[in-house]
Image (cartoon, rainbow, N blue to C red; front, side, top):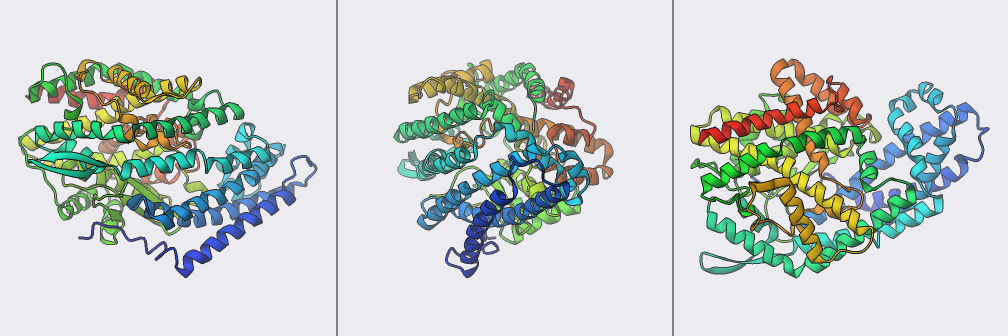
Length: 595
């Protein structure tokens, strides 16, 4: 089965007639909206008739929906090409061109937002128009966030400068990590392998190879550490400057606003996570004991497979397993996954020049998705495919929504993906032997520990990074020290402090996205919210499915509190987060008592 994706459904090439026509339409649309907002959105004139205001808002919404689908198509094609070929010169050229042109929208967006905020009758306008009412969250959010906008000219300037600032640093980091070849000796032969391949060796059955890969990985970062540190400092410095200028209390405050999440929710969730640390520490020490370590688990053994079960999958068998078991939840989910495999929506082959890790790009413009993974045959790889297909299913549930109403915040983005992971894990457990059951249980706990404990360490790292970056740029050694300290606080005595990962700030791409700061707590939210939903599914059975799909379809037009209320969940309550964590700690207790 083909392990590379097809992008022909977007465009056949950058030279295709369709791509060129859409680029031309894209450029003309930008000029049109720039002129339109100047002519129609003068916030200094508050005598505009209500009927005129309503028509203007409706016109802007219709334009934005059509334009966003066009941008979705052009931008995703360019970035998907780059994700598997980071040195592609043509793709890089168009990526820069699109980003530069999109910066032109900063001024009209600012003008329209401030104009909306100046309307005293905005609520009545929303109620008086089906189009506006359907997009009420979008319009209300634009108006309320106008207070964080700079002047029209300043917003335009900042957007353009990002292309030679944070965006450029981010591209540099992608190139550094995707093209890094790691020297390693395997079976007496010296070879150089892509970083993604080396990191995947953490899941290998051979303990010597796991340690060898870990040591080789850490050593290889010396070649790019200084450049990565410069990129990280440049990006975070820009973020701090803009947050201050716009009036945010901090980059975290900015991240929460972008996530449609309040501090009360974050505090409740983090409080419950901190309470659970002793249970996870108990898990890490038990795993260390089973593997023969007395001083805690070395970092390179975090993903060591447990038990003697042979759980290797071919790409074909992974597809069969996923499609079959997704059907236990719904035919709609199963059909989506089968369609993704059969129509080559997945790029699963690890290779040089390709980004590591995995992601899903939902292509709302053509009602499809594309998934990148680096499949090597482990159960973890199967779980990762299920995770990304969950993101794609979320996109499927939003295909009937407008482009503006399909843009959901980061925390809720992980809900469907982790839900699908849970389906696959539970399916694997049903027919597993005792050894396989032990291996799967340990894998599940290990995955959960990454989302709770490692994510906590990344949150602590980024918090301290922003605090220190206020005063000066941080050298490589200081970044390493902060990361080590964060890992010690999160993992406690569960890890051997002689074998941690001081360079984790290099290989995690989220640190290098100026628009996605603190892209760590959203994963914890997604895991724990999804755990709560899955528990509800087990109680309700088939009657849950339609409500679940409805929840996913509403995620683009509500804040997190409102979305959670659809399932009668109070995310301000620490008890909800404790109940979800309790599901994991019960598995830990089971694991500790199995061997």
